[in-house]
Image (cartoon, rainbow, N blue to C red; front, side):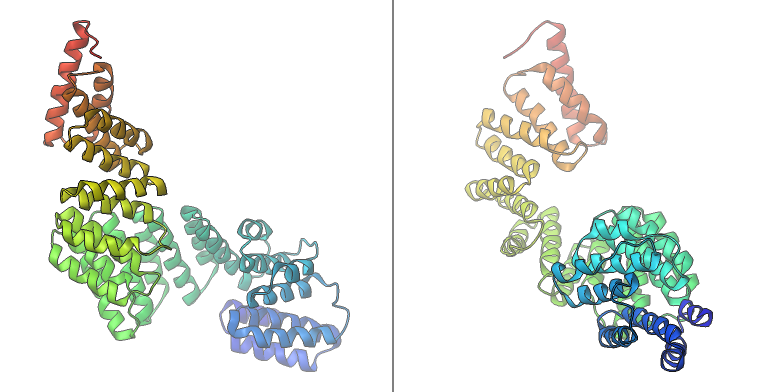
Length: 450
């Protein structure tokens, strides 16, 4: 089997299948049984496309006898049934206790298909043959990716790339780069992409488009929108060549253009992304368009996109969408509608953003006591340093000043906490400094205004 395993590791599946088929058909019973099982394993690597042939190989192996309680046979059958979508009650009883890494690998694949991610992760063991060793790391990467553990996923993909050859190594490095981006590690993503480029000769246009897309995202993350725009336009050209047009490519182009201050061009790119997006992708584009218009001061346009967005009930960030809609309505002076949207945002979990808008509405209507409570709740629920936290702290201090420097200790505490997050040229920096100095003077005079 050495030649077969070597061919598999090299990615020469045709040779491996040919050698195994001959051994399965013409070898002695034990060799034939082993060959049929390995053939089933090879066809299982093709996923759904290999199901029929994998089942046939398992049936041929079983017909030779003695496999009813064989852990490898049963783990392979479990994997195929799980891949078909069979329920747990049909799959899990096939598992037999085993420390064999191959058995554990196929059990892990079955558990992965069943959605039992943590168990799949625990099932994987070292000691696999080379053609499975890199796949096991790739499987770890996919599991960790689904669990939202992006840095660990990136490391798993990189370990897999170290073991893989040729295109498999290239694809794993692209996966690693994508996970480094999700983890906010732009430099690590660039390193993985450089390795990917070196690992492959002539790139398929679709793969090359993906690599340039990831390069663009890395440069955006690192604050280089000009470089990002160059890379994303290479990706767009390659997509034209390949015929595979993803919505994310013009979306990133729009993000780069926004960072370069080219709003109208950015919105044109977002519209292209919206045209390319499928039903599950449209909400992400609409949110991007709504926030871009909001930041640009195009409040009616922002409202249009955000109203379309909040009709997408399956969107995972609906709470923030309602908060953004509330801000767009508030900026237009439509206080009653803004308050309703903000309360919906709070109810759905976007407490800081929603409470901040509720505070603004109350403040503008001179309901300062109510505004103060909303701003306090926003400050307490927001992450320190976030936009909502900074805005809420500023407004608590300002509102207390309007109330006659009530609670000067709180004004000093909150003002001093937020000042390091403000640029000295920011008008709020000067205002808060003055508020804090006045509150400190009152405290020195022994005054406690209530």
